[in-house]
Length: 278
Image (cartoon, rainbow, N blue to C red; front, side, top):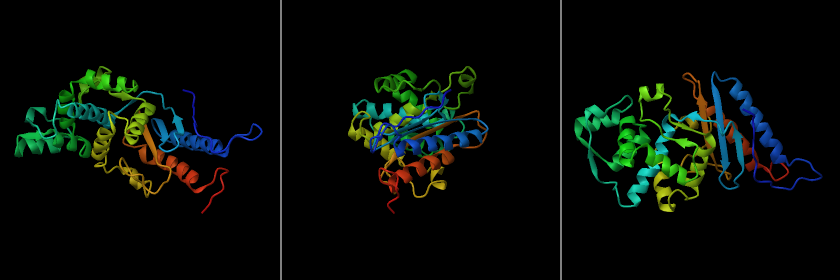
């Protein structure tokens, strides 16, 4: 796929047909992502939106990638919609059983042994905070299944996000019913959450509060950094989606995020011409 990048914000108008300094910086950042990608055993897709400026970076951002656990956020969106509509409540309890346990479901299995039930709030919490797969499968059913989640993404103009199987369904994966997303649509979902445009401002805030429970490994590469509900030390907060395919155990997230963080930190420290002010 041809590499492409987009910058929607020009801090100063080009003079005499020359590129603005921010455009040159964006091109340099794209080149750094390409070098990083070349060092990976698999493939890479990155999409970035500046949350205050709307500026975008796109590296293979319109390519489909397997979502891994990021698909849990669209599931959460539909569950919160049903709660806000009065069709579910955070405090209603649901029975849980050993037969529902799948790999990477320790919190769910603990609830089976100790309480025999979980509230919707507890299911959401362990789905997001613990990335619990059995809780996710329970919430997919509660949300109305694959079609309900995908319909919600379509209505939000995010057709690049598709829920097509439950967690740890190897048979579905072998049949090519993989959960997939484009980095651009996933980062647009993040930008909509930040802007309070997912369902409504209150719903967006609730979803971000749940997402704020995640302690990701991005902090190992970028310090200081904020996630979900915090914007860290940058005056130019950004949303980023990093996806990979054909990878072994390596995660491209910290490396790609550091490159993008450096990009926005340079913009943050400089004036429109690119002169550092500190």
